[in-house]
Length: 140
Image (tube, rainbow, N blue to C red; front, side, top):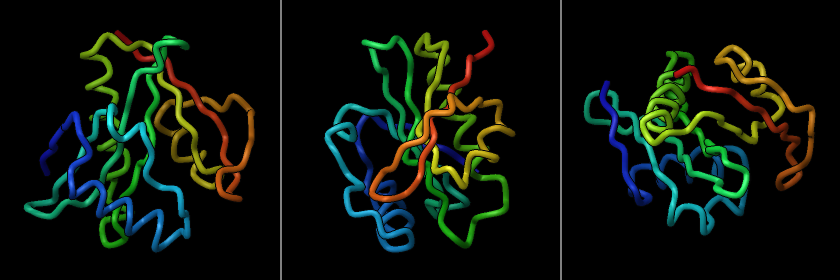
């Protein structure tokens, strides 16, 4: 397992997100302006790109935001989601970040709780799918 961290949206990340969020889950507004300034992490299993996420600083709120965490179906249940989340947290820590927020699909909130995130109990909808804002303070 290896990681690639980019300051642009790499093709591998776009393909994973297209597969998971657009084809599997039916989201239509997957790509946005944030992709142009976010950091992107891709996790490889041997030579295959298997998972991705992005992160960016919200300077106004003085936090980092992690999003678009996606793992290809054949790689699910193997801990890759936790691995890529930890890598993103490591990158944020290197950049001086202390607080992370994420907008989790409500059905995935339990996964994030196991990774140390707490629900802010603000539920809203993204393309009809219930989401909840979650937050984590990084240890230094």
